[in-house]
Image 1 (cartoon, helix red, strand yellow):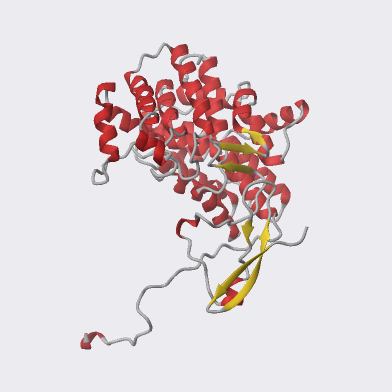
Image 2 (cartoon, rainbow, N blue to C red):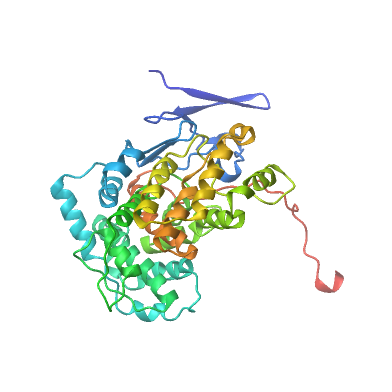
Length: 428
């Protein structure tokens, strides 16, 4: 097949630029030589039309509501796989054999403990510190404790640091919760699953045995799978941009956590639950729907619509089923959940929302599930960071291994003053 070309004409002069094809999805115009050939940049705030890298990890078709990890549909992985298996898939490209999965789980389990001096580090935070603030600090500090895995040019260092980050994140998150509520830290229990161990470290106490509810463990594992990776979103792009400078992996993941903290990104499920509490009861839904339609009203329906998905978020389909399973298993009778179900039904049957393609996303349901399990809203984004760590690590590894990788350096459209001469202070 002949090479595809795109032509750009500026002021009567024409240039050809190659068109690159992926394995699926839209083709892209390769404009890497645009500035050198034309003296012009593209202008794309938010990078809505810009591919920043090549990746074989995750594919999203927002119009069709498709999310694939290494080619596998997210619905199949959430239904039949485990978070550890999905983690192996993202890191290595293929689903593991039974022996490979056993070895991987065993490796992760052996890395779950934190350096004992980090206990003192936690106690330097105020009691009311947000868990995400603590996680940013602690993850960034890991590079000060694990010098033996920060050489990014060494594949073995990269492998060890990747395993350490995935393994230690549940411990870091659980300790952030324990510190906030004034309970003692619990050490990891190597006899438990990745998710079961996290639940025990979060909700268990030394005075008694912690019993893991199978439905809760399954739901949490599923939530982790659904949040494992989501292509080149803001936090993942932050990890890649930080990594492009050669920063160590712990610093890169800390940067990703900081970006995820924003309410427009990882904080959306917390905002959604707060919105449902504000609405309160189903009879108040029509009023809030009308407010959401009013451009002059600052109120927005959180949990609807997505930057990428212009169809039903495939993760929301899984979450809708999961929330019912958790509520039934725990015997929860939550008016917030009933409000959420009726809000979903009314919004999906409203012409305004159908026209705007504002479908429920994963955040619409995940907040209700996490709240039912017992997590405070301040922990919601921390749980997101815990799950997304494997995606960040896989993306970081892919970037470091890419021979065409260069330091990220976006350009700008400058609109400030042109050159002017300095005026001494006494003459101003």
